[in-house]
Image (tube, rainbow, N blue to C red; front, side, top):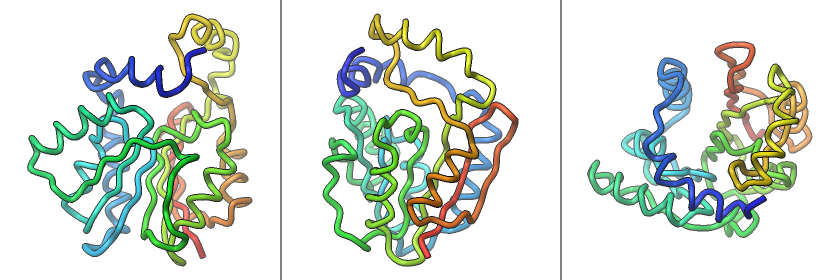
Length: 206
């Protein structure tokens, strides 16, 4: 299996051209997230990819620090932000493990389509919890493959062997919610468009 950075660097161009599979649900997630925005908010996004969601949210907040392990992804993200005239996003190449963010310094963290790709998810959730201000929010959208896609356990390892798939964890939506609770979060929103769809959640730091 390729290291995560190498895999996503190689996938960046193809990823940037892929279409959103469920546009209606995506728009709903944007709407639900923006309900928590204020114009003075400082956001952190981990695993921002090519920046599409950060660019759409940027006009509604003060600043977004958008991070990803793939410099190729971020090159595309910077080009897209410049083309859109967006100037309040700082794109940064770093892993979640190496993330340097002061405790209690951000208003909201975004972890979209990333948590199921992290082998150290519990530690990442603790890091994001520490980084948030009291009353801050973590917004996530997570594929829970154990709910309806368990058969992929036999397919993904083969793809990984040939460098065609990244690390992927299999978990249920219930297990994910338990992990959020263990990290100190309380659920503010929990929405799933369908039984096999990604779980969208807004978690609050008390």
